[in-house]
Image: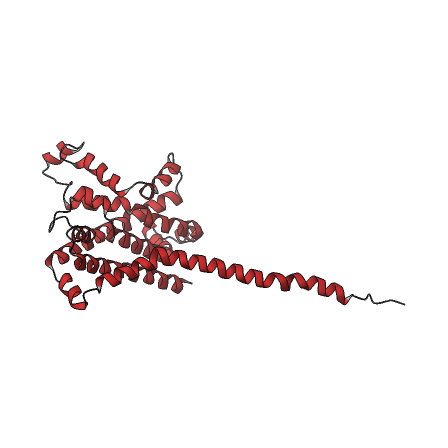
Amino acid sequence: MTTVPKFSPRRRTNTSRPGRISRPIDIWRRRLLIGIVVTYVGLLILAPLASLVSGAFAEGVGAIITALSDEAVFSAFRLTVFIALITVMVHAVFGTALAWVLVRYRFPGHRLLNALIDLPFAVSPVVVGYMLLLLFGRNGLLAPVLDAFEIKVAFAVPGMILATMFVTLPFMARELIPVLEAFGIEQEHAAATLGASGWQTFWRVTFPALRWGFIYGIILTFARALGEFGAVLVVGGGVQGRTETATLFIFRSLDERQYVGAYSAALVLGLISLTLVIGTELLRRKEK
């Protein structure tokens, strides 16, 4: 006769007890970690934003409108947007090509080139501006060539564009490289087998797969270009009405104790950046 094994109720109680004991501990650990993270983000991001809004509205909405109506503000923002758009257009083409070469080809110096892309993250923008002065300044290495063609780079808009392009170099490539690696080459080979040319394969097969990474790269590049300060200050000089961007206007206004103008311009830049960040997040959700 087969006997059915009996299970002790006491054993079941012992095995389930650790779960009931550890569950409240895990909940409090999660709450503590979430609280630390929220406090960390709040102190570094939300508190400065709240201070900026408070400073901008300290004298009322009318003072903000008056400050933003100044021609110097319009000139600074026009130059900022112009430099950012030029930077985005250049990186949209050459940043995409850079990512393509690094993923699709192997050549001597491949790892070095891949590492150099991240150099703008490690080098101070002030140092970048100084290096450009050593190259394009009055006594710079390339000064004789520039003088011969009557081209002015240092303390002019071209130098500021070069500085902004340097500090924004990694964003487009770093967004596209993982997408290209995940996409692979099977579909491209299939298109080539069906008789598609290189351009047809890129525009109809590769680029649709890259479009979200391409958009992310453009948004990040544009946002970073809007907020550049150190490099454009050194290489541009911050001449009012000529080489003064929005960030340089804020710096000058604070130095001259024109706090309403400084806070108002900073608030506009902050709202633009916030809009770009929210737009990026919405695009990411749409992709998913």
